[in-house]
Amino acid sequence: MDKVSGKLTVFFEEPFWVGVFERVLEGKLSVCKVTFGAEPKDYEIYDFILKKYYQLRFSPAVATDVKETGRNPKRVQREVRKQIQNTGIGTKSQQALKLQQEQLKTERKIVSRKQRETEKQRQFELKQQKRKEKHRGR
Image (tube, rainbow, N blue to C red; front, top):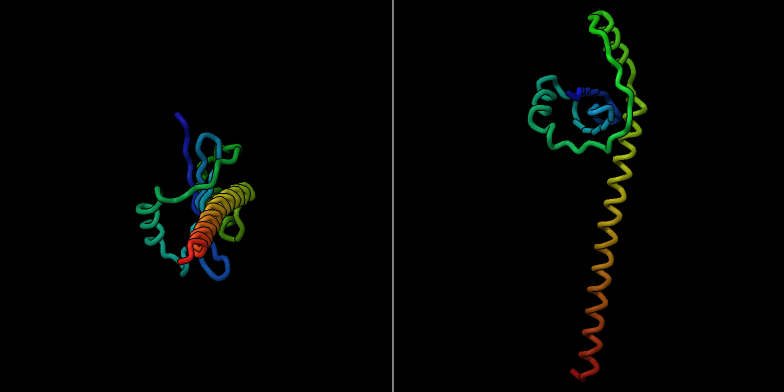
């Protein structure tokens, strides 16, 4: 059976509070960045996860090595303290976010190019129609 793990890191990135969802599925890491705005309360984050987690658009998966962590509570507490002090996000997560950003950028370029071409074609058709009307002497 495959192991799925998830992690949410919430931090302040001028001027908004941002959450980074990290999901490791079958040894591949995918990431999604969510902007919260004002500082979210614990119950707001929990509510967001319950209602909107499945609507999130995760980045394409990046290969990563999954470490088995011990469940020593003191060690877990130290790791949490370290993560709170560390304001950035992991480099693998940054790579995954960058990959998603580039993918969305190419999709936007394709859509805008199609819109531009259809508008250009429409303008050309209008011009041709006007020329025909003038030629007919109307």
